[in-house]
Amino acid sequence: MKIIPSQIPIITGDGCPARISAIADAIYAIGGKWKLPIVLALAGGNQRFNDLHRLVQGISPKVLSSELKELELNGLIERKVSMAGTQMMVDYELTEYCVTLHKVLDALSEWGMMHKEKIKQGFREKRQEAATNN
Amino acid sequence: MKIIPSQIPIITGDGCPARISAIADAIYAIGGKWKLPIVLALAGGNQRFNDLHRLVQGISPKVLSSELKELELNGLIERKVSMAGTQMMVDYELTEYCVTLHKVLDALSEWGMMHKEKIKQGFREKRQEAATNN
DNA sequence: GCTACCACTTACCTAAAGGTGAGCGCTTTC
DNA sequence: GAAAGCGCTCACCTTTAGGTAAGTGGTAGC
Image (cartoon, rainbow over the protein chains, first blue to last red):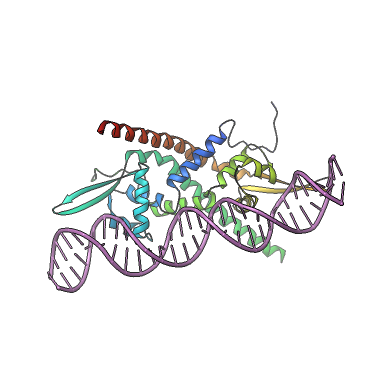
């Protein structure tokens, strides 16, 4: 067995093209600015449209509407219409399938926090370098 | 303790705003169409610029160049210039820090594969429904 | 009958991501 | 000396994500 010193085998072996496309699929389904924030907002319990609009700060009704549709298409949330008297009522809730996102959400948020720290530290180091060079 | 039946507590408790921003940071650093494919291409070993260009199919030199710069800024890859005789040589390699992406890559690719299957199945079910209704 | 809430939709605009094609300075090979 | 490979950059264009502002059809309250 040959060992190439510079090789860092994070991803081993055979499945790379499949993995690349799988990751692309995942990013397609849950990527973008709003999908995961909406999922997290619903994780605290069902929400009505206007509640979500208030909860997910900065989103516009147009974007919220389209994001909800895509999330529903992907089986991650459910739109439930009911009647409160003569008024119709729309509830959005996470599906059980959405639980499968647990690992992804954990890994991403953990890495994101760690990475933010690392970037901050990088800036600190650069400032120090600049200070010592002058 | 009150239990709200409709609540699916994927994400428990207090840390939601922090988690949302952490996930946003992660997506900012490794999101987009090409960053993770490039990382996976480098995972098999160091590559030269034009090798990467051939390996990551469909990418243009302009985009490859800018993606490599961003990945370097984020400390995920390193650009190594050396001399082969009179010719200069540029190698890109993953940093050790990039190993921290392991979990993210695993979770995302696993979920992506599973999700693709689920979507396919959904289409199958819909075709069946349509068939029974007619 | 005016206002306000509900759940959205429509039309329009902007900014950023990404694609296209050409070229640059260098060296090696034919 | 022409062509081809190296590692890019430049100028320009298209596509898409997302933002803005207004409006829609319904109900309910004052």
